[in-house]
Each structure stands twice: as C-alpha cells, then as structure tokens.
Image 1 (cartoon, rainbow, N blue to C red):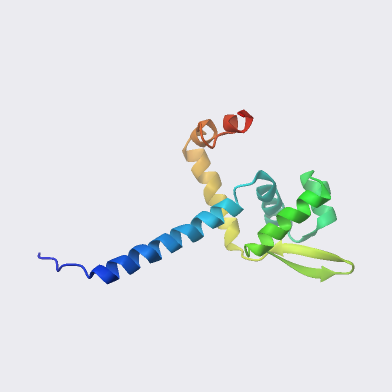
Image 2 (image 1 turned 120 degrees about the vertical axis):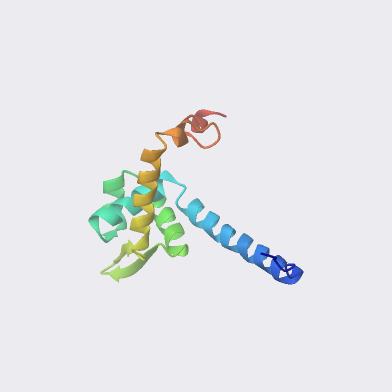
Length: 129
C-alpha cells in the first residue's frame, strides 16, 4: 500500500498540538505530584466535601499549608469551593480524579515499588541534597 507524502504544515501543526497536549498532561501530573495535595484529594475522595479546618485535622498539616494546596488544586480545576457559613466547603470538582488516583494505585502495585526506588523521583531522592 503506497502512502502519500505528508503535508509538512499539517505535520508541524500535529506535532505542536501533540506538544500542547503533553504539556497539559504534564501540568496535571505536577498538580498531583505533591504528597500533601494527594492526601487532600484522597480525603475528599473518601470522605466527601470538607472545610479547611476539617482537612487540617484529618491530614495533619498546618492550616496555611492546606489552604495553599487547596488553592493550587482549585486553580487546576480539580477541587471547587462553595461558601458554608463563614468558611468554604471544598469538594472534588471533577469526579474523574477518583479514576486517576485509582489507576495510579494499580500502576504502583504493578511496578512492584520501582517508582519508590527510582534514583530521580523515588523516596530516597528526597533525602539527597
């Protein structure tokens, strides 16, 4: 089967579009790349909406830390907030995050902890200066 020569402009546009999509995916994974944000998302996934004060006591982080990470997650479109009296109630903005977290757990189980041993991103890399 003969293939026609690709249109150079279409090919460039496709690569640019592909890079844009990869950059968006990388931004998503960076937003999920902090243990505190993952703890907050897990709590919201398992326990439903919560106020900052609830999250502080349940995930064991300082109020300023929880607030900063909630702002990041909200800016990324992963959580939403609604007024609840004098506080705000935070919830998952997109239920698909549950599937992403579940898939990550399956992938971690399938790799047998290889990610934790990775010299660049693994647990031991946190202790190097």
